Length: 176
Image 1 (cartoon, helix red, strand yellow):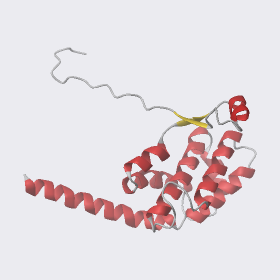
Image 2 (image 1 turned 135 degrees about the vertical axis):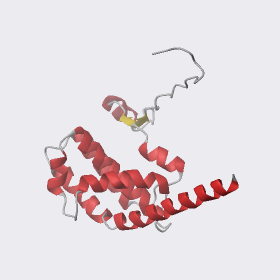
Image 3 (image 1 turned 90 degrees about the vertical axis):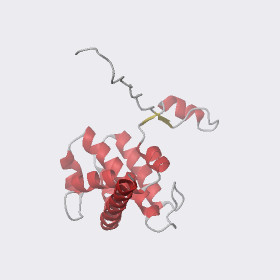
Image 4 (image 1 turned 90 degrees about the horizontal axis):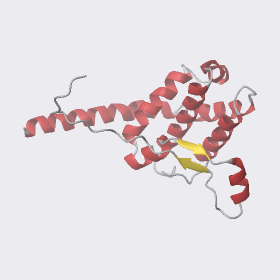
């Protein structure tokens, strides 16, 4: 039994090592991704809500103070590229990928790159950080935000709870 556990741990370490290597290569695209977000801010085909998220993502990447500060080598940049990839994937899912591809000046396909980053980054980030960055959120009401700016009454962003998983009793005799 312990040999199986040891083999699983070795395999997991190998997978993480490979993920780190791939992410190091992806991190070279971070400046191009930030430039892409900036270009998409100027595009009239991009909805205003997406532009607000792009601006927030740019500030997050540039700011040295974020969930994992950039002075931590490697892992400090992983959360930055993850945020950039998630914002791009959101736009791609809500509109046409050709808009994003048109503004991309880096090598390769930006859609595939963003998808790869979004699938690998959660393996490398602490679980809490990954959950915070990838949780579904919605913007607060515009009127509530404007009214509460000085008084901090209304939240700007509200987390949408994930649906609960229903546990099924496997011993049930019920047929479909």
